[in-house]
Image 1: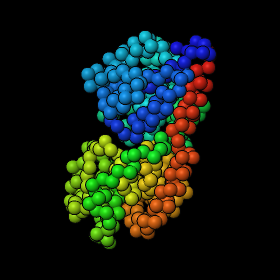
Image 2: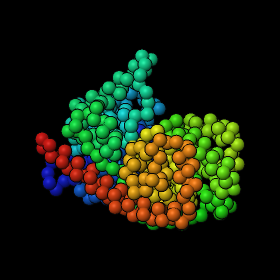
Image 3: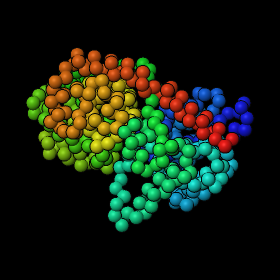
Image 4: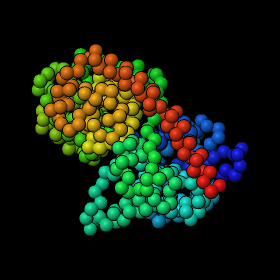
Length: 380
């Protein structure tokens, strides 16, 4: 724990770690940068073993896992409380609804460290209805602890901050946009088989958890329109896994486009996959600042998206070509038809330059460290 100017500030991150998706990637990127700072000690506590835990350990970050599949909520609470009592961090930083209130309450009864939480996206669950009373209670606890036991609530976009204004006190809220390592990775220069085997086709993809909010159904319906117009010009790729996999494959079959769509499932080489696409589509009903969009642009692949969340600012310089205000498949069809290969290449270069200027992992780390330092001085 920090008691003097020469000691290191101890930051402990808490997250679920059950999947490897946007929030987990952003946490990994942040911890990777923070871990290089010799004025900070970084640790992580996760509720699940998985890819995030493995990757953090590979960085040399101390990782503790309290397996939520083996412990109920009360048992997790006591484990967190005892952990905080024994480790005495200066700042706890949470990254999920359950972690938010469990850690906030346990921290108030033990280490009394400064408390930061990041809200990575708008809630995807409907808590209405008496039969979901327990979920409504958890949602209330999330908000109450944010207002009374938390020092800062970080939104990843201005739009998300505006939505959170009805839940959290204005003096708690701030915005720090997601960041990404921008470097010329060797993965970007590997040509995958789908590119080698279909060199003359335009490869268009969508990536993420196969859940309703991602609207992969719109992606497939757009594919149908494009293939009806130009059956030999396109191949489509769905990267990711999730509960809608079977349903989406059935939809592709019913649309008659099965031979033109590849469902890849979860892949470990997503940087390479993104670099091999001509265009990434994002049809989500809502987003925060999606890491996959940042990753695609860093890999040299333009993104066409529904104008929601951080995608509006990310793609603002090409809003006419790349943003769809209504998430309408006909608009996606018309915009894709208009884009030529040469234009896509030029768009990719300018978007990557903008990414370097506005969404670097270094700036993300600087902004979080500033918050840590500010709140750690409160009442010290």
